[in-house]
Length: 75
Image (cartoon, rainbow, N blue to C red; front, side):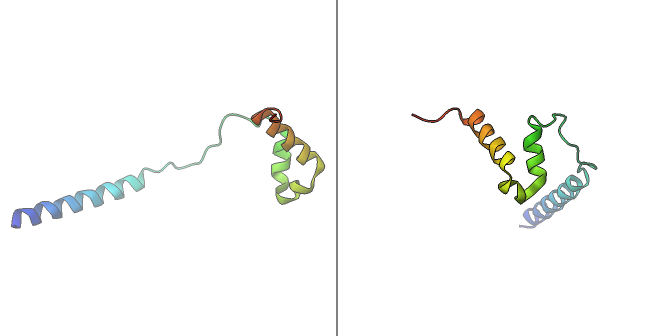
């Protein structure tokens, strides 16, 4: 019984140390992907936020993007 208590305590201490050590190794800075935007119009619309939903150019750009992604109309 005493050996099990010692081993359990040691295991808990080791797991706690591993968790604390893992938290210290987080990256120091966030980097953006190297790939640029494929469609500058969609990037402009993204910058507009909710107002992009009312913009005719944005709605047309999103419709074009959906058509490219999903293909033509289903028959």
